[in-house]
Image (cartoon, rainbow, N blue to C red):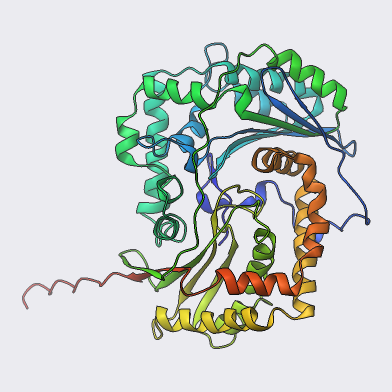
Length: 466
């Protein structure tokens, strides 16, 4: 199981497949290869990133707003997710359905997702559709058709997503919502970003308009376009369509920093829909700007990155305590590069009813302690770093994947061009870096566990006549 974020029209577990091709389809570029990246900021504060690629007459575009789960105000739980949907309800000029018909009618596709630090709107289409799509994107940045009818429609859609993906599904999303809520301390980080029924029901049209005006403003947005375009042409078109949109000052980003935990946190749950017990184990990590973050990404891959990982060999194939294992850094929220503030290194597995969660956790502890003491082997470090670099190149191979990663990088780090430095930074991670991070963060004191077991089944009713 692996998840990207909340995608419109998809379940939470739909994953990054939309943007990332299979790794076997791409070879790593030659050493020294760099993406062409140009960045400009309009007078209204809108940041524009362009990366030309003339290999096909198509383009990918990602429009990222700096509003995600952890940035929504108290009392507005789920508003970031709600607005991911509201942006497709149409505008006074282009009613509901026009955006999708124009994009899809020209052979393109569109989608959106919400994460902790941003909401992104993505499009891939033939380059001949660029002007029309830019016009539509600018039109909905100017203002939406925020009527009571449209609000109620999308409120119902979000609530139905919660029912389908959380309330009426085995395990729900406990390895995200419940684990993060238990491990993280600040309300901004710990609350359920999928949405609170109470907050959604209490929302008024005035509340929604206020939210839009606060966060959906040019100075709080990044647009990245990659594909068969020229930089000067794109900058001119974006200026034409977006340059006159007035900008407002977005709310100040709240303090979302977290210290490492000092004592293990454990949550026992029952699940009436589950057939076998499951557990999620998380370790709190600092944000992407920390020097420890990239070694933590490498460590997460060493522990749970496939059938050669230490947890798979030691828990699934080895002692056979688990039926499966998934996880890594920033899992299941998204890829390791789709985060700004603190996150978790998370591991999820189904365990055999003949064992117990504490036995599994104790075995995990022995595996991680070995890395904290002696570090990874040279072979596994090399293997994991090669895979990570290949994953990155695969993400950048398509115009859409490239545009989205550049827009997110600009939003979360302030530098889209910094994506070009990632391969070298991955290669520079040492065994000592990984050992240090394992010893500092993957500890019992910094560990949070959610143990979710099947609820007891009621005894069958006796047959009539007995």
